[in-house]
Image (cartoon, rainbow, N blue to C red; front, side):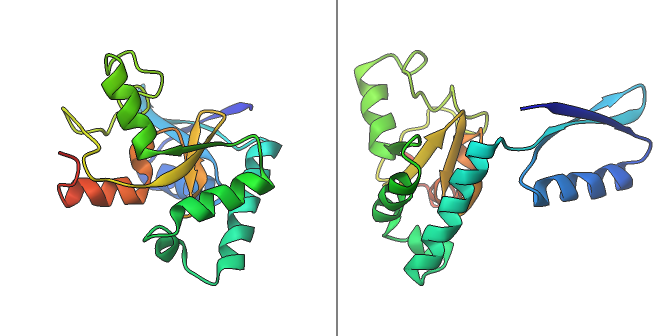
Length: 167
């Protein structure tokens, strides 16, 4: 995946560019360089696009919205997408919970802290139940079809934290 760089004079123009990049499924990081806004961005490779398309196709086949899928049908959904795109890894919150309990959280292969800068301190999955996919360094589910490198960009996990279900 090729990374592009663009220096913007104004934050307003940079924000417009960021919105367009995200609209096309791209990833973008911004920083300040000599008083200007530097955007570093990339777009998904063909396999990531294939996975995203499989997610959209599966959503369409369910006759549910993405958020409705994540309110009880996430396991079936993730399995159905995996059938269309077998390279994806099927994961659940329970997978992370078990690995954290079996290992030192900081060294567990799927430690939440390895995959998220947004994880609350002393995070525990508690009663959170959710299934999602992992491929090429990104997490995917029905509400996150373009994927994210941060586990806690998954809306179901964000909602669980807001409701205090992570303790």
